[in-house]
Structure formats: structure tokens, C-alpha cells
Image (cartoon, rainbow, N blue to C red; front, side):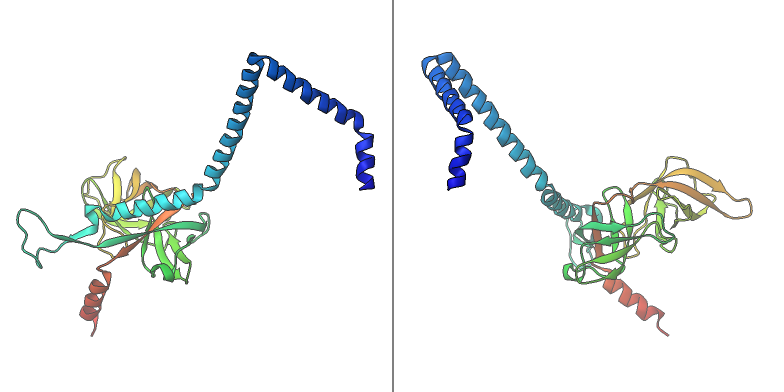
Length: 276
């Protein structure tokens, strides 16, 4: 306490000056309506600025939660698309309509780690067994295909990226329906190739390639890339197409894990057919 009194005694001149300034400021405001209104306006501006800063800071810290909410909402909207439903007219009698049932379900996930410059690239997603993820489920982004789930843990999974030479997905030309296999053989994270396209298939620079579907991994019609070059080999009956991928695989963000609800039945039947 003694030290406090000594400190106050040393700054007595400063304290007296501040006291007199406050008194003078109060008398000026009390005796002049113009000064009072200006002071109130300045105080309101300062308080408003502080509230704005607080609001912007709160909004910024809440962006991640808002992005997660929007991703879940987008996944729900994707499941309502007609391409995710298969006709079931064999089970029901339909009048002037086609009865359909859902074939694909989507789960929003977030990329927590990824590579693009390795020989075989992968993505780590924040969804696993607890969320219903299983191997061989497709992964798509807002603009195209991303990869296929390979390893699954309780809370995370690892997917083989499209930038993996071993990931050969069946794709087709959106304009003509001619199909081939997607192959990453360019070493460039933004481009890939499509092989086994028949030479009689009309292909032009600017054509769009989409997933063919039917493999239990991707729905049909998901964007893959845009043709940038057509290569004809005189010694082959097939041509090679270079394309620019529509999905930026070097960008971390939200993706969607695709579950084919009919895959188990189809795989079981095919296994029985192939059994000796």
C-alpha cells in the first residue's frame, strides 16, 4: 500500500491534469448543446466500430462451421438429382410417370491432407467407418471426380487420387457417348489422358468427358475433364485424348464420398456368375 501511495504521489501532477481536463470537458458539454451532440456522435461511431470489429471477428471464426453446414446441405441436394435414382417399374405399376428409388448417397467430407506431385497421389479425408465409409467408394468435388477410397479407419480414410496411374476409371464423351479409360500418365496434376477411344469416334478439342457409371464407384455424368488434344497412332485402331481435369486436385476443401446403394446386390450376383 505504501508503494502505491508513493507512486500516486509521483504522478500527482499528471493526475491533477487529467482531473481538470475531465472537468473542463464535462462543463463544455453541459453548457453547449452543439458540443454535446458532437460528443455523443463520436462516441456512437467509436462503439459502432468496435461492434463491427467484433462481428467480423466472430463471423471469421465461424467460417469453418458455416462451410461444413453448406457442404452437408449440398450433399443433400446432390442426392435429390434424378441421376441418383434408378427406375423400379418392375416392382410397381406406374401411370403417366416413372417410379424410381435412390441409388446413390453422398457424404460431405473435408480433405485434411493430399499430395499431387508423387508417383501415386492420395487424399486423407476426415470421415471413416463411424460415418459409414467403406473401400471402393468414389470421391467427387464441386467440379468433377477426385478419387476412390482405398483404406478406411474409424475416423479417417485415405483415397487414391485421380493422379494415380493405377486408378483407371471408365469415362465417355458427353457429346457422343464413346467411352475409354482415364489414365494419369502426364505427370501434370492438372491433366490426364483417355485411352482406348476408337478412331471412328468423333472427338474435338473442347469436348467434355464425364463418368460412364455402372462400376459402383461414380454415378454417370460426373465431369472429368475437357479435351485439349487428340493423338492418332497410325499403328493402332485407337486414339489417345489429352484432357484438362475439371477438378483442381491441389486444392484442399470439401469433397463428397459417394455410396452406390445397389452395389452389394450387383457384386454378389457377379461373384456368383464368375464362380466355377
